[in-house]
Length: 516
Image 1 (cartoon, one colour):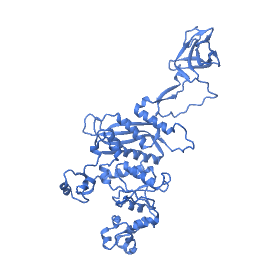
Image 2 (cartoon, rainbow, N blue to C red):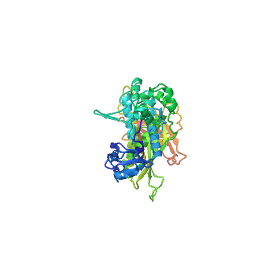
Image 3 (tube, rainbow, N blue to C red):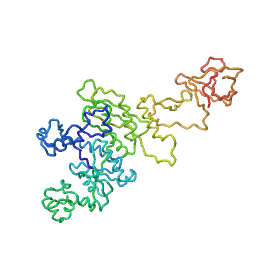
Image 4 (cartoon, rainbow, N blue to C red):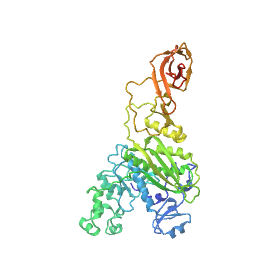
């Protein structure tokens, strides 16, 4: 996969139109209507379409560019930003295969992937190529994909300029390439593909204009004049010699940042830049077979602005279930950013992972359960937390307390479970009602029997609970299951005299719950 616009996209990302075309986005910063030229050593190394329409060409001097038009924006090439973009691309492509490597040729801007074991998983060669191209497109750059049974042969195909015909643009990865067809395609490539190994002008001077003609030269004489590196690379590209690669190693922790191509003052502009970080995060998590449960996106502001922390504005994101889906994470960040007031322009973004869990895809069921999967429920809870706030989406959690009114508490759904598990109670658990009253209801006593719309008949033996002496809320109760004449079953208790009641008084009865 070759990035032909790397010097330009590293400085001014070319975000996809559906992301940056909203009326609320900063179209004046992210769009590419202005002519832009990237300069290095006072010469043009790359220009966008509007600049080329004005006459800007590769190798043009700075004075010549200024003479063409004063509206042409001249940006200095930034190798550090290019390396950062290549690292992000390598991280994002880990979603498709763990075998990712960066081409060692200087200024090749090429990433090589071994997708032998991924073709069936992603639906075949064409579907995988479309997915890879779409992933890189969301990073703000454009990729040319080449495929073949050898890595260097596919890289040479990917680096060739696209050809336009009457049927449209001809892409190198239109279909899967076998070894025989790869040889035919490589033989037709111009000698400019060997510019890092040999001088194309010298090869053209001896009558070699294609790689096929170079291969037909005497190997001994070619090695004596150009060295062994040229023939070694040709043999590797044609599959006649093995090639060794150093696979890309992901960092142990995820903490990445990026500079935005301007001063962003809206949620849409921030989300457009966040896609690059989220896709890199998805690839990193896929390699670890994990999902994020808590991460923080830091909005970096201009440092000369007074009244703002130089460390930026943190936007915390908590998830009920681990996830590595960039679309789901983007929706949650949108809910958060829509509530944020941008008091100062955003010039950079930083994303770090604070907590994650193992996240292995589950096998599909032959007969899916109605109502969606647990992952769908987790996405719904994450969306509700981002929209309503973490403290407004709660779930009950049991507590080690015998008093029924204190046997559970409400906690946020993303709060982790305690590490220690409660010891299992011996024997069968006692029967409990479905509805518990907020406050126990005092019951009158008629003929020494509690009454609730009529006399109650006791159906069970007493269940004695005596707890709460440590927090000043002592409860000494005997619980019974009682039934009314019409069949209503109640959960009642009596307070023992001398514990919570006056000395010498009779038993007091209370209604605490109702059975279904």
